[in-house]
Length: 315
Length: 311
Image (cartoon, rainbow over all chains, first blue to last red; front, side, top):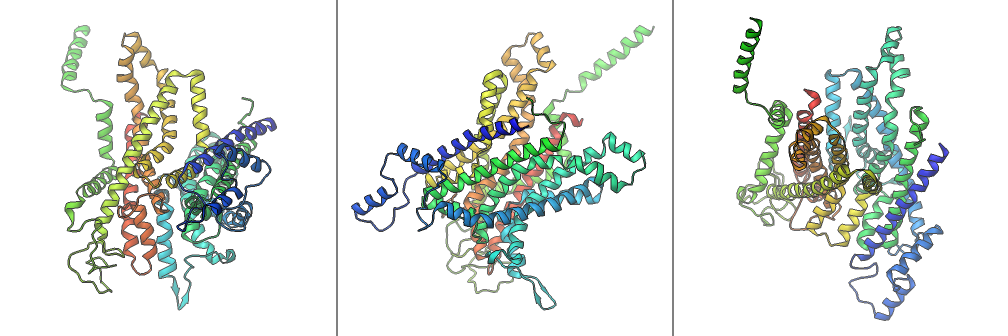
């Protein structure tokens, strides 16, 4: 078990290394640089700026310098956002992104499992078909469509009950107030709710038809005990391995959501930084995300082994 | 007596068998697909959208970049119009904030979205089938190395690379195909390899070989038809994924450039104007949603139609 975990961690290092190398050279081969501007600076100033950031050195030398700094935990200064290091920017954005992502995952689990189990219990009946059609909707419609539409509905047209204005704010973080969180978290969670509901329905249907559930029924167990104690525990196992992909999707989703709702998370930096050629910030955000996704995949695999005794790591 | 009876029946059966034409896997699948109402409706809707996209220049008096200065941010002609619009012509879906006809722009967006979808899927199909088939047929250590490479690529946060690529190469339209196709081939390669591996060991391959069918004959007659089912299903599911990826990039401002447009661009623009001019958001969203739905229904229908287990 421990050796399996160790092997997986060691296996992640080359992956991260490939990501860093690819991202570094792709970014640098792009025409333009972080300090290009409409206004032409005198050449000696341009030279000094380049020298200050080591941009005058040969590319391979810059690459090794970057790796050296990275090994010391230094992601470098941001080239565009003055007086901030990339580490500071990520540290400032991470709580926002994490709060968004975790709330979305929580919401998705609660609703996804609830809907999935309901659909499985009423297999091939009306409620099953209804839930699965809605899930199809959630999977098909991308979040950059749902986000503006929901904003239009609940933010712009708003909710008015008996003279009460219950409209939701269309953008902004406001220190993470609940009102501001509702729309972005909902939009982020919708596709995940749909995917989780499908997953849970599938495995639940299978489990409900298995022999031990039939035995439990034959013994005369009340059906709520069968569902919660016997079936659900096994049926939820596939969810654990979905954890890794879910985090990856949330990360991609947050790129859009943080931009639409103007939230100060990490995702918002990435696109702006790529356009501005803010090399260090792009690299920093990318490495951070990649490490996050790898970490969650790893956790999911290990957790699966802990929960499911049938999985062995001796291969 | 009995023997003659059987031979008589057998002869009758033989005669009957001559009348009944053998149905191939594909004819069978086609009939099953036609019985799936959601899939058929989806095919029809998608066909209409595709035809409208192809013949977009003939469907309206406006070009996709023509500005109608008498009708800026105009509501659809049939909408109860609150603004003052000098209605020179009919704008079925209204106009955008520089007076371009939204109906025409959505159709041109459909051209971009559908062609990117098809082209990038083709790229992923070619890479995926070649890679997967090679790995599956050759097998052994080469297979292990090749699939390990796919595993490594799988764990990369690809959308970030595509973003960097699009930024780096000035939002090149053709690069968009390649970039998205290059991302989508991984799953295709896995599917093809898995199929190739399992088909290689089947009895009917062995039987064909024993009967003296050549290698090429086996591949053409037995391997490819059996490999194609899951591949076609995955292709119909890849197209919407690609359309999504393209719209995602365009939405972020990294895809198609003005005055050309795509659904992602239209939705992004519509989002900016939605408070006063909701039609700029609603129509592109509706087109995109309907198209994605159709592809998903067709994919599901094809899966049911081509899955031999269902028979």
